[in-house]
Length: 146
Image (tube, rainbow, N blue to C red):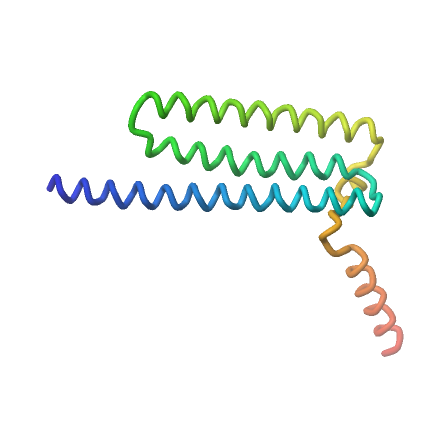
């Protein structure tokens, strides 16, 4: 029975390690995307590049914190737990500061909620434009049918 427990524990540890790796990979991809979008936005001289970058970094940090919290499940001794706790606190503090800066940036930019929602990254498509063109096509089709 003890061997079964040890075997299950090993599989559980491996499973958690892969899940943590996946979550942290997603956070890294989000961070790379945010940085690339900011660089492209700078070259295109787009507005609110700093705000978009801060939001991307905050989202990436959230994924990283999630991975670290999940990692606490497989920690075996107090030293690892203390180091992990310090990393989580540091990332949480960074997230808090970035969210605070985002809030200040939004207030100082005098943006409405709709304008903030419409901020696009340079790598994304203009879905609002696509939607409006579909609506125009639909109304012209209906007008032609009558």
